[in-house]
Image 1 (tube, rainbow, N blue to C red):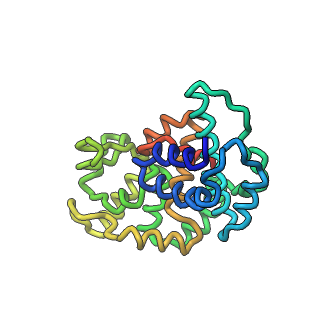
Image 2 (tube, rainbow, N blue to C red):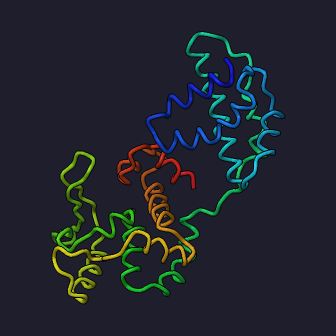
Image 3 (cartoon, one colour):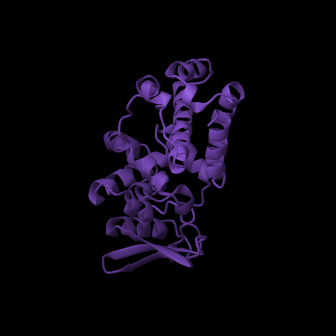
Length: 259
């Protein structure tokens, strides 16, 4: 199988995922232009290393391109196996994993735990509430800024947040909420005289991102912290965490889990 055929097969497999397709294509097209006619079995680790070393960009960029190339060779081997043909060559990227791997990042959960006191001391009340909604409930910024007082429900100490008019074939989505957080939201609503159908946080997504970014974290870090806590409670299974966080793909949850 030639390199061009292997790349075309991989791109065809991911074509329905627009962002994934674009990322793979950007990584593999230059590789295809140079080596397209060569057979996959003829590649060596040195060929891959020279190609990646000649590219501009950060170490993270080269790591991403390396992973795409590795997956492409894996796909070529899988195609041959599925067609009943023997595979007598090894993936050349196997010998370069140490060279192109990224340094281990400090776990987002640990980093946020270490910085929590410093972060919350410098935030206004509304941003503290946004912080807690993200870390305790795993909400996205777009979900947080859309919350209205009418979305909050509580029976005794069983509290929840209801999202209406969901796009994934659901009329509504109910998320459990800690009672203490529910009380804080009620106090904030009463203090600021927020009407029943007004947004509690009339902010833009960009404004929230900019604020937290200026403090050294992002809303994505906060969700990662939440998923890390959820992961430790639910075991190593990705699927239940994926369902809980409303990810469309388990691959997305796996990215959070690897932190």
